[in-house]
Length: 65
Image (cartoon, rainbow, N blue to C red; front, side, top):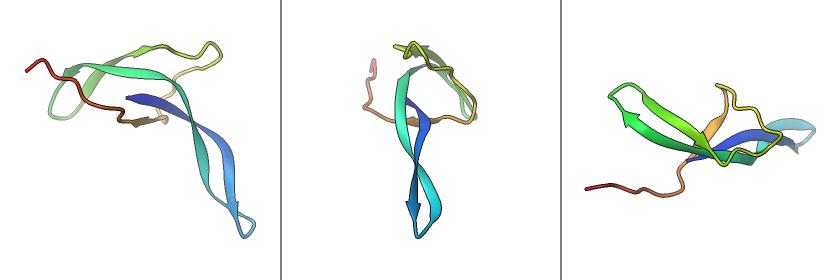
């Protein structure tokens, strides 16, 4: 997964409706349970700090099956 932070705001009619997303690294799933996953962060941008409110975006799947 790409780990994303909020970037510049997107405004429409003078209102902020969203923020552009900037990738700061990758989250790799190590363990998957029914209610949560345990991930490790890789390739983190030097100035980035992971935070709980950040979003993830799928970039493809790899399975060992």
